[in-house]
Image 1 (cartoon, rainbow, N blue to C red):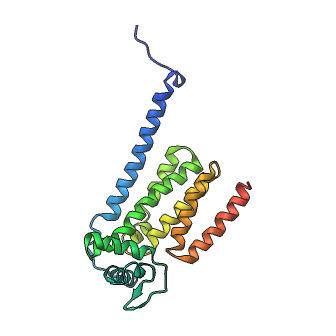
Image 2 (cartoon, rainbow, N blue to C red; image 1 turned 120 degrees about the vertical axis):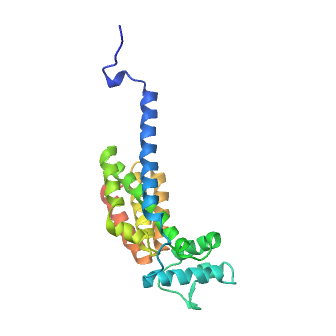
Length: 219
């Protein structure tokens, strides 16, 4: 007589954990590959049309070509004059890609596209913290992935894609730190990257994080 298992609790806990890990890995890898395909394919097919793209690319190019060494990575210039509009983190990342792949449209837009792809995974992680269930978190990430403003800003050499990534990293670390205080390190790294991308946004989000933790987790 064939035996058919009728109840979930009769299964091995190790097997359940393995299936859970496999499904989680499948969702994460699938989301990241979908984001890379959407944000990176044909990234250099168009010239730098937006004035902000041209400015960021010029600052990164001067960082890459500067003979002063490390100091120009900390104190960037625009057409030989000090560039004080924004902190230099994103410009430095673009300059690093120039070192690897030369100066072109693709390498100019690549760091922002990769960071925007990571932000899709962070939305999924935040969904898992809020909804716990996998399906709502997965659909939240898919909706975020297919939003036209997100796609548009992620494929341009602008600050918006990295800003989204660092903001979501801060929020994800904050939500996880409610159960494990070690995750406050991730929150701090996200805020630091945000401050090195656009200082005012970092200060505003730091205030939101502090108020939320005081309300939700007073300890």
